[in-house]
Length: 323
Image (cartoon, rainbow, N blue to C red; front, side):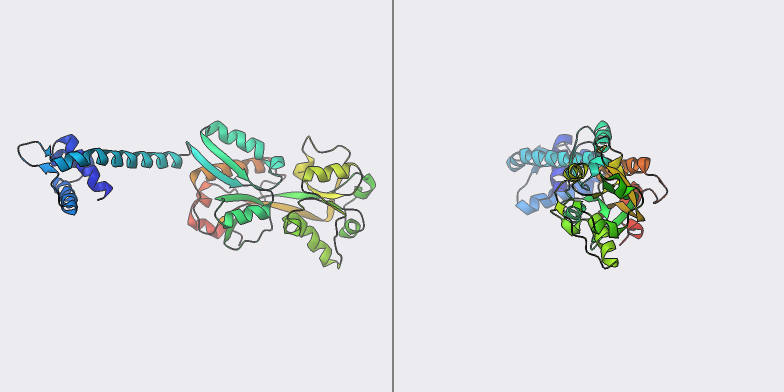
């Protein structure tokens, strides 16, 4: 028994003939006859009394009709629900985001998306880019917005923009000029994202710079959240790294001064997805909003080409990934 057979059966009952059912379904009359015959043969029961110009139901046909209507109607409602989801009208979507998304795009992104898709539930996950990578890999998250570098096995990576990483201190003399790694390792350092430690992409960049000079970076204080690190820096307890976007926030402590690195260091913000996957329209629309918001605040919007829906919804987009 198939949905197609049941739909033909219901239409034949409603139309009173196989010809009417064929017209309703846009198929030939012999096709309807064959579908009904297979249904009858499968159960070894006759469903219609074929006398006169109009079909009449047998006892078996009458018994089947209520069930057939329920199954066909449920199938149609399911199809309508999926069609509506494809149009991004309702449903739930999950996106992984970098830890400091609030400083870059998160409030504006949520507001814009909700304005155009008020019935779509938006779920945003992520304590750190490393965690987002794992979520995308294992399928918990459809896509993610992360800071590079990240392990890219099984992933496609689409860079969006760069944001400069600065060194922050409450002691103005320590950041009166561009800062070198030698100065950093010789002063008290406060680092955040303690749960992910050196898996954190920005921390890894800093550690690699120290290693290249034969130095070891050992933070004196480690905390979980950026806000806690900034509070310690503002009190003069130690220095930390911070992205330029964070320094532009109205909540950035006025007691803290910043300077670039002697060799400029950047966080690259990117979209990630599982290799060869196809993103849903809702996620694509959300990523387009993020891309537009990031480019609006980027000092040089031409650093990377825009990532838009046609590029990240087709399998051919893998050619643009950084893998």
